[in-house]
Length: 314
Ligand SMILES: Nc1ncnc2c1ncn2[C@@H]1O[C@H](COP(=O)(O)OP(=O)(O)O)[C@@H](O)[C@H]1O
Ligand SMILES: [Mg+2]
Image (cartoon, rainbow, N blue to C red):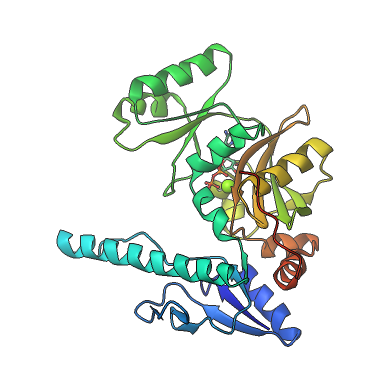
């Protein structure tokens, strides 16, 4: 029995899983996706980032090679463009290795079927189709459409927030200054949403069961902007989820084919829960250490389980 653990060196949740596996005498092959230039396959055997995957029966995928390229100071544009292609080429080979592992009957967590749901618009569309409770949403690159969305919410006494499709920024309230900047929108779309006022709740779902649900104390719109969270002082309060919230969190994970999922919910003052997103590679170690929820053990059990993988609804 061998397990491949695809993760960056800084991934403490993954490191905890590795040590639990080794305590049980299980071989762990570390795949560090940033290690470039040591990839090969004859379409039967696979080496990715210098790691021999052939003896691995299961894979915990926390990170793949990054598809993003940051230009070095003074680097010419042709070199940046070439590196961007190379980054995509590495992503393709890594994904193919996981598809091959799955096709051989290996357990890949999260499964390849979850990959498209790394896209926020893809997720949100699927959540809407599944009838899950998400905030009113407009994804647009068009200033006039954005302004109308914000004005319609304002007419109901509600606020809007803006967040990027991929990253590079946290969620922001659309205050007067941000609203004035909507005329500059484009060419890339952004996500505009009704602001849901309430507590941030992180639900960790493993194999269709809630393993942890905590309120994250925060004084800012996006809890990651709270200085105490950013400096490692995050505080978590375990919550007992009502059935609506439990079904919502498990439904979000299932919709995205995530057997391990960090689901972000908002809890309103009325006690209803609204779904924001489902993360395929959530960080849970801080929550585990501060609340005692046995998340790493549940992930180990999911990796070692021999139960058949259940396909998500299509
Ligand atoms: N519609 C919203 N209403 C209120 N807060 C939001 C909303 N969308 C995002 N946030 C805040 O910003 C955080 C990050 O947004 P999220 O959708 O989880 O994206 P990501 O974590 O990928 O940046 C949320 O956990 C929440 O605190
Ligand atoms: Mg989030």
